[in-house]
Length: 320
Image 1 (tube, rainbow, N blue to C red):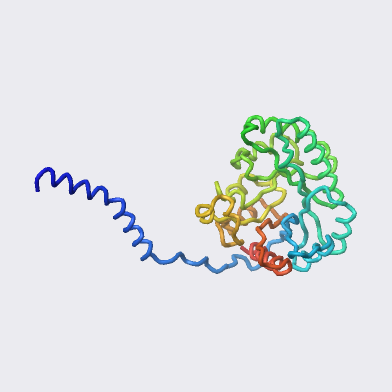
Image 2 (cartoon, rainbow, N blue to C red):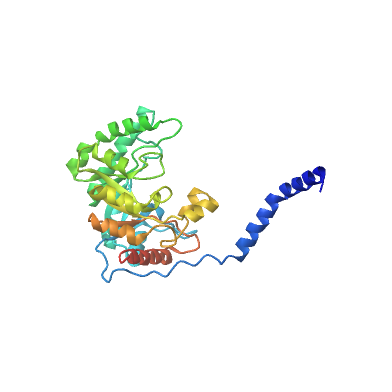
């Protein structure tokens, strides 16, 4: 082979190399066995934990074309086996209390209504003032309902609000509400969410401790951690700061295939939450409080059917 023929042949082989590699990869995938189905659930305990089962009420979906009263929705939760619910602040207190008592449910947690639209870290003092007033109202609602905590997203970091500004402003504004929380005996429970703030459990613990008050604690969301970490590690570090737990699933596989938010579109025990490890970490605290579900609601399931299904999943977590 002369020099010109060698160069020509080598160039052709180099050009074909990527296609050959792709063909080899396709062949490899075609011959590989399909991913194994999730293993059947195996309880590790014979006696369920004492944690009560709760439901995040803002995730409730009435059947298309139907209107259900608050009392009817509460009764459906009771019939499905839930012990209580987390409700948003700003509702009519008398209506909520009547529905709660009629169904025989508890309300352990109140969700602060405006922490996304009017974050405590907002550049606008007027918006921050609205949120402070709403947090105080949420604390009063919680006291009226017998709740022990208010869920609060403490700050939002974005293009307009730097991390340092979010840290400083949120601390200043939350401190305005701590005296009322202490007076009422209702904890301000800070939640880990996708808000670009308090991204590690060590930082979260330090932030929580900076208020030097037993009424500033943590609302731990299991599913929200999985995109960047491991929930059992968060539970171990947050420890007794945890006031309430959100039970939520997340799939890294769906995230990688369809985008970050898609990771939440998965049933309990079908994602990447290691529930035995999570519950073991909570046992070590020890945490005996509420487990409140915040799952995506399948559109093809009627409320009674889905609530019963979700309640059964919580029963499994109690023996995981």
